[in-house]
Image 1 (cartoon, rainbow, N blue to C red):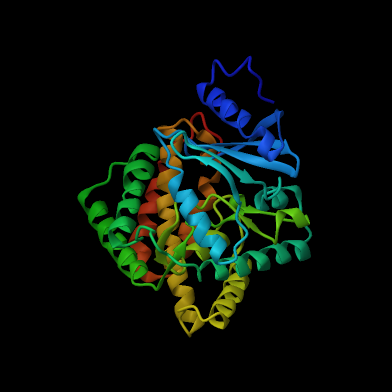
Image 2 (image 1 turned 45 degrees about the vertical axis):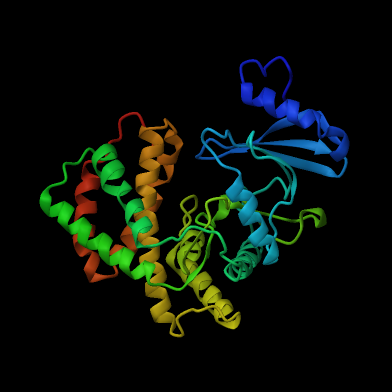
Amino acid sequence: MASTSNTGADPRLATLTHWLEGLASTHGLDLASLRPASSDASFRRYFRLDSSSGTAIVMDAPPAHEDCRPFVHVTGLLKSAGINVPSILAQDLQQGLLLISDLGPTTYYQAIQSGLEDAALQTLYRDAIGALVGMQQAQTTGLPLYDTERLAQELALFPEWYARRHCQAQLGDQDLAMLEKTFAALTRDNAAQPTVLVHRDFHSPNLMVCAKLEHGPNPGVIDYQDALAGPLTYDLASLVMDARHTWEEPQQLDWAIRYWEAARAAGLPIAPDFADFHRAYEWMSLQRNLRILGVFARLSHRDQKHHYLDHMPRVNAYVRQVAARYGVFTPLLRLLDKLDNRQVTVGYTF
């Protein structure tokens, strides 16, 4: 719970509380109920507070580090497509503050961790697949392109932060040439896919279990401010190769087939042959997961957020799953073997 006694040590909290005071009567806010809701890998953090209509969420995005405008813009695109995203109740973009509707307290990830019967799990993920297909029919007006250049820039995180910094490996000229060739093949293939709205983190921590009528249809979708116009298979790769929870290949395949069938029925520009689609989405997943290894290493070594290392073995396994299936990635697999032998383990739990 927030109080005036601790706002001095947290100037952002003082700013946020003062802003909410001006909104309290309009939205029936109980300021004394303000409490942390969540934070993420960026500078953003979230608070929940009680209101006359239930609960609401406050997004605190320090303007020096974050920009609320993309969130507001993508909210409009997704709402127009019928996706259940938060409503923006009040905003102060200059101060980096948003008051938004609450889509419930439980993420898919939390529900999975608490234990779910398979029937309930399958229902949740069929809803998520339906939302994904709907989201991919949204307009992409004003979104940056997820093009070859951007895809390549993201892959640079793998040698810099994962190989060199995290694994403490010396990459020779032959290693670098191999990575350059591999990355070029991936980015060329992935950038050639049909373009849709890409959430970029469409996975269990960003899907809300909407079990109550006031929260809207399941799932609620959050954390989409980094959306781009990019490859059709990207968000499916996020969903079925979730960096936070391991899904075995038979489950991945089941959900991929269900998505492919739903996307075809909706008229999305998807490959008519499932084998072609499956290869495309696996290559996309390889690109994404190589990038994630770099991102998680950077979050640990640069930002001291070491808990991201807990997920590295899972992401590494997803990378190996795909790399082992296609001969073109055999040299990458050999490099991974070398890097794994040099994995730094002192001080961390894997």
